[in-house]
Amino acid sequence: MANSLPGSCIPTSECRESRTPVAGQCSGPATIQCCTPRFAPSVTCDPNAAPDPNACLPGEAPGDVGCPPGMAHVATFCIDRFEASIAAHSPFHPPVAPIGRAVSKRDAVPQGYISQVAAGSACAAAGKRLCTDAEWLRACRGATNTTYPYGAARQPSACNDARGVHPAAELYGTNEPWIFSHLDSPCLAQEANGLAPSGSHPGCVTDSGVFDMMGNLHEWTADPAGTFRGGFYVDTMLNGPGCTYATTAHDVSYSDYSTGFRCCADPP
Image 1: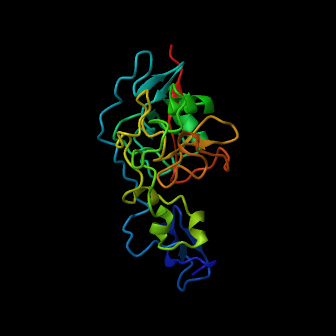
Image 2: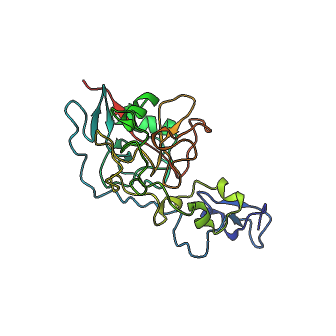
């Protein structure tokens, strides 16, 4: 126990990601320190592993006429048909510079743990850009301005938006408030019945064929004040229903397991 958090005495070199070494709590050499927090006894995830479940997927599908690969045409702009992943990068770890190219692929595990700044860089590396708030909302609400991407009334289970247990409570085995200071663990997005591959909820689609704009991951827009939209796989109602869901509590450098993105582009 250190600073009221549970922990384990392990080498400091192994205390990484969401875990923090605290000196003076363990016997032995200075390289052995109390590493907090520990996971629930049932958790087998290795937070230091960096699996890439997208490595063997085929390339992006052709885009709509006038749009780059992987993109749908909506009104006057193009938008990624699927939540973005980053080429040759584990979606369970924050991207670091130089940030790779954003891609839009069906069945890819989308990139979480990403800030607005990094998302913008990934879009730029693909020759795209982050969507404006207005573009994102237009794509989600469709030509008839519906509340949900699929229509006017909520359809339970159409989108990945109702996980019963918060993943941090499951990962750390407690509902104590300290767990919400440790939302960067790569294990959070690897829990069962959590983050879903892009396009795996066929009912969660707009009138333009854009998937997962509600639930799965929050999606950054280009708002310089910092806005992500659409909710995520635990909640799509707290900050507004469906497409209107918006979180504005964080700046553009913020990231956690639930923050994702997709890109927009201008037709030639």
